[in-house]
Image 1 (cartoon, helix red, strand yellow):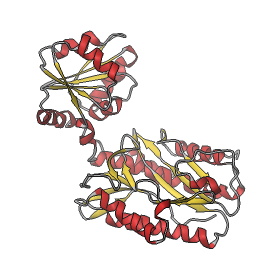
Image 2: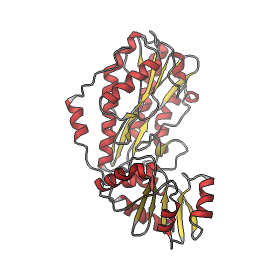
Image 3: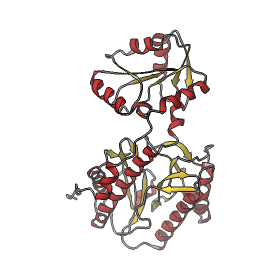
Image 4: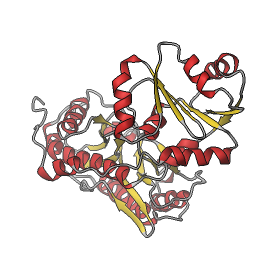
Length: 381
């Protein structure tokens, strides 16, 4: 496995990456302010770096964002003095950038003075942080635990976000096409995972969107198996689950590839899982409960007699994080809406033998969905 890939990027993919549609970042702070009114808080301290990136375009590793009724204060340290100013300006975000030292308390508390009800991101703040905020940062305010105020905005993707997820999906598709043939050579799982990751970077990704899964033979019976030193061999089903990141946005795809000729059980396994995934895709459309998509995919597997071997949910949202709302699961109470980006990924896992999973990332539309991942299914080498 010395050949780590080619650095040439196909013209079509290069054009896609060069022509990404702008995102509507400037409107997001006002949308959040409207949500604050509904949540009955005057201001919100945003501590999640992912949410800060969504609201401002800032990509650094340290920062706090205080969103006020008519203002916003972004506080970071000296490492990001120029970057913060440049990135917020590039995204036309109206916020004051403040550079503080190791103690940002004085700057943030001063900006929040006069606020009576201050929201915290309950899902992102530790107990120790909450105590510090209450006792030393904002003793003058009532701290309100909020949940999902920014995440609820992130659920619906604008065209610029969809373009980035689509580009990340195209990179993953192209990377697999370039390295798939190597499965015939008997590589170790971890070597093939490295080759796939390297190819995605060569094609323009900033990196993989999560730790790439390459699970062969009996390892394929473990839905989230990590690549091992096991060498892929003739007669193996190989589950590949991977994705790329473009401008912060993730893609997610799974394919199960047969090395050599399948047995009757392997062929049936692939056919059932592919049919289940097709049923799930067919069920996706705006206005449909997310649980109904799970049911559609699960029913095909149930009918095949493998109900107990489908051990995870059918899908999840994708965006700046690889797992976002809405969940596509039996227990989900979400209803799909136009602009959601979700995965559909049923699988069947037979302990000691192997398994199969097929996954696509799709954009929910009013009349169905648009598939963003296009690598061939039922593939063999």
